[in-house]
Image (cartoon, rainbow, N blue to C red):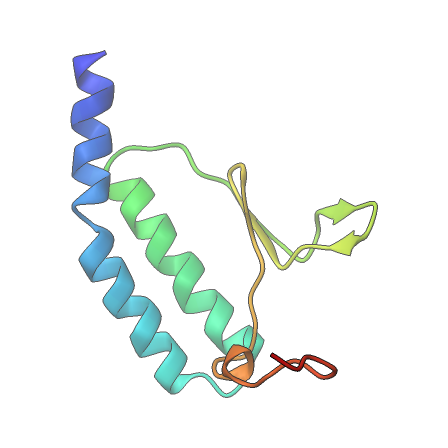
Length: 94
């Protein structure tokens, strides 16, 4: 069990660098596809560095409600074009 917690701590130590990579990718990307690949690459690097089994599936996994953008092992990721979530939703009036 100690080994599991040590590995978890090591992965969590990667969070600041992963956050930086996400921000960098958001600044460079013009659309969702250009944003998705650098993020998945960064996650794969962390998994490989810490000898974690990972499997990435892009736009292949289908739910009852449609497609997911990516499935990283068992983590489902939905990407949006950088900046799109900063805009108010249509029909939303706070």
